[in-house]
Amino acid sequence: MNAKVAVTITATADTRKQLSGWDGGFVFNPLLPGLYTVTVEAPRFSRMLSNVTVVAGDRARVDAQLLSRKLIPRRGKRCLISTNRTCWNKA
Image 1: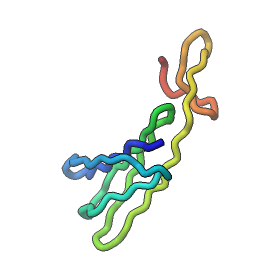
Image 2: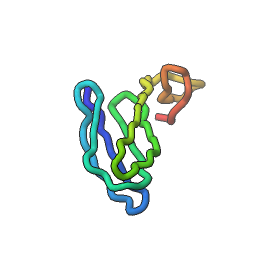
Image 3: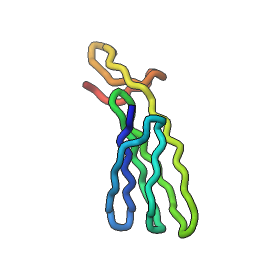
Image 4: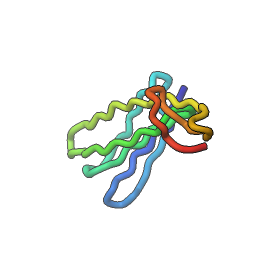
């Protein structure tokens, strides 16, 4: 499954988007130096946000881990939860 990946430079809010490869890998070339927010999301998984600093002439790596979500009843309400039983948002 391909995940949606976005990188946003915080200084200008410019965003670039792409789909990950079949193995989950992604590469954005080239990026200007600065602070970025990386967002990774896929259906039935929690969204991952990570901040990363890109330095001129260097590479920055982000290892994304997405938690699986399930929809189950919880105290009379429906709640999207991760496999570790943390409530993410009410449905």
